[in-house]
Image 1 (tube, rainbow, N blue to C red):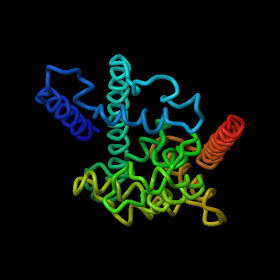
Image 2: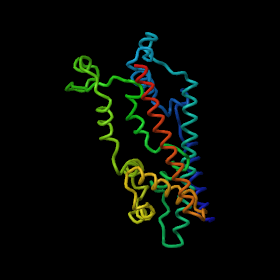
Image 3: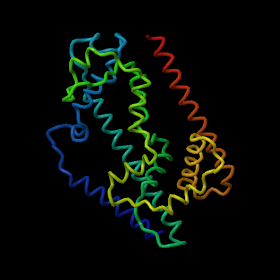
Image 4: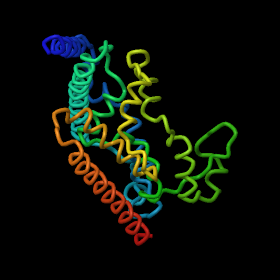
Amino acid sequence: MEGYMGHYTSVVETLKQDDQEAKPNESQPAFANLFHLPNWLELSERIFMNSSIPPSNWTYIDDRPPSIWATAMDDFHSLALSFTKRIIHTTLLISMSRIRNKADLRETVEVVKAKDVAAAISSLGLESNSMARWKGCARRLRLNVFEDLSDNGEEESDEVENGDPLPYDDVEQMLADDQDQPEGLNSRANSVFGNSITIHSEDEMSIASDVDETANTQTEFDIDQEADEILVYSAPAVRDMQNAKKAIKARIETERQQESQAYEHDDVANQQAE
């Protein structure tokens, strides 16, 4: 255990040293070194405050474009740092637990893997795929979405302004074609971390073997897999795995039902507002 804690301590010290050696622009606020502020303003102008319903559109409120208080950006900056530290800390603990458990059986490479990050995100109760929320953004905010027919990709062409808005089903399907890929997390993690993360087929099979083969739907499979990840990485000391898994699956199913009901409630409210 001492060896693993040594690795953990060295990683933490390296992160602290990198943070101290970083030389951000001291003439501007800390959040300006992390966030691309024009993008935040553009999100408000084109997405969050650009509803097709007049009272929810910024152009009906003021001639000036949307703005953001600097104190709000400070809050977002603090949240980003807090969540990042929590994810890193939890990921390191899960990685050490996995390595320690496998070291008794065979030689194990001491690296952080994509599935460690996924398990950390799950154990913290965070969403692992933010793209799913963006997919339903147009319907939720009652945005008018147009297909860009211009040759040069200019955003405000005459063809776009004079055309008809795309149906929300078509918009969501277009986004789903690009976002809902089966490899999902692993492909994105490998593209970000490069060779620092290694995904071994035998490790993936060890998790997949716990999944109930009698699951008839993709939803059941996802729930079963999520429950297995929580048990394998977050609760190594649980003795009664069977009952623990049932309780976790029940909680996951309840959360998904509540999320589905929330989306349905939003759709009804938006339709009534129209």
